[in-house]
Length: 228
Image 1 (cartoon, rainbow, N blue to C red):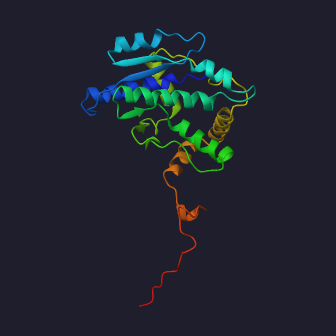
Image 2 (image 1 turned 180 degrees about the vertical axis):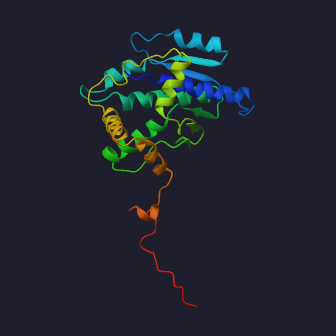
Image 3 (image 1 turned 60 degrees about the vertical axis):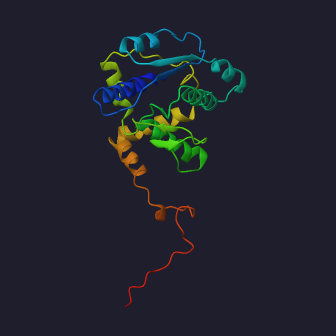
C-alpha cells in the first residue's frame, strides 16, 4: 500500500505556513475525494482539518466501484482511477471558483513518470511543476516538485500526521510504477545521489543534442561563416 497522504500533508503544511507568513496571499481550500474504497476512515481527514482550522471540502464519489467494474482482470487500476480523481478535482475547483489545483507530487513521482514514459510510452515527458489544463481554465501546480519523497515521509511522521493508506495503490503485482521505483532504488543504492543527478538533467535539456525535429531544425542547420 502507498501512503500518498504524507505528501499532501506536507504540501498543506507548506502552503498554510507561507500563507500565515504573508508570503502566499491567496485563499486555500483543502479538498479530498472519498472514492468509496472499503474501510476508508472517512472521519480522520475532516477531523484533522477542523483541528487545523483549514477550510476544506470532502466529497464522496464512488469511483472505486467504477474502477473495479471497468478495469479487466490483470490490468492496472491506476490510469482510470487517476483520470476519475483528476476530473472530479477539476470539477470541484470550478464549482468553488478556484483558479488553480495544487497537487502533492514530489521529485520521485516526477522521475518515475519520466521513466515510465520513456520505457512504456516512447517519449521524453513527465509532470511539470506548472501547467494549464487541457480546457485552459485552471492552473495545475506542483510546489513539491523539487522535494524528495523521503523528506516528505520524515516530515509527516515527525509531526505525527494521520497517514491514510490507499487500498488500491500498490495493491497489484507487477505495476509499472513499482517496477520503475525498484530500478531507481537500485541505482540510488549503488550510486547515492543518482536520483538528484537525474532530476537535474530534466532541467538541463539540450534539444540540439536530441533527435526531435520539432524541437530543433536539423534540416536547415548551417555552418556560420566567420569570414569578413
